[in-house]
Amino acid sequence: MILFLSGLFSGILGGMGIGGGTVLIPTLSFFTDLTQQQIQGINLIYFIPSALAAVIIHSKKGNIEKKGLTPMIIAAVIFSATGAFIAMFISGDLLRKLFAVFLFIIGIKELLKKDNGK
Image 1 (cartoon, helix red, strand yellow):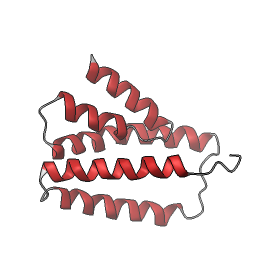
Image 2 (cartoon, helix red, strand yellow; image 1 turned 90 degrees about the vertical axis):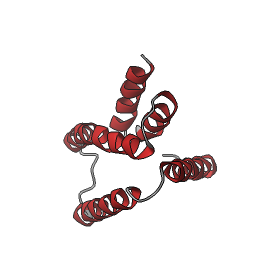
Image 3 (cartoon, helix red, strand yellow; image 1 turned 135 degrees about the horizontal axis):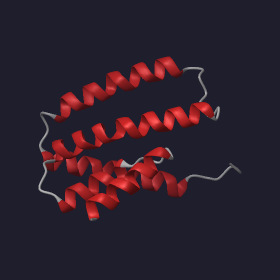
Image 4 (cartoon, one colour; image 1 turned 120 degrees about the horizontal axis):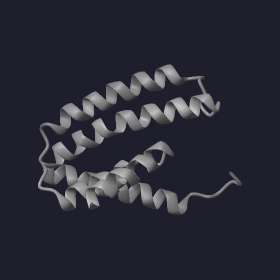
């Protein structure tokens, strides 16, 4: 039941553009015996339909700024593939620690971010 709720909540967050992996990855880490590489692979596969649905909905609502979109997509594909390739050669323990540091930095940035009325 925990994995189902985690998947549901991750999908909702992903659809909102918040990043469902921040829920899905820790849940899979704590409640399964999967390796970190497997967990990150599941997260990437899980992300595709969520991202596609979000792009379609946001595009229909006119929420996507199309200027500069092509270079951003190209960079995302290149760096995602590079990161996936590098992750194959890094230990799961190091990947877990790097992800924890990443979440910590993002959390601190969000806490320190000033709200400019948006």
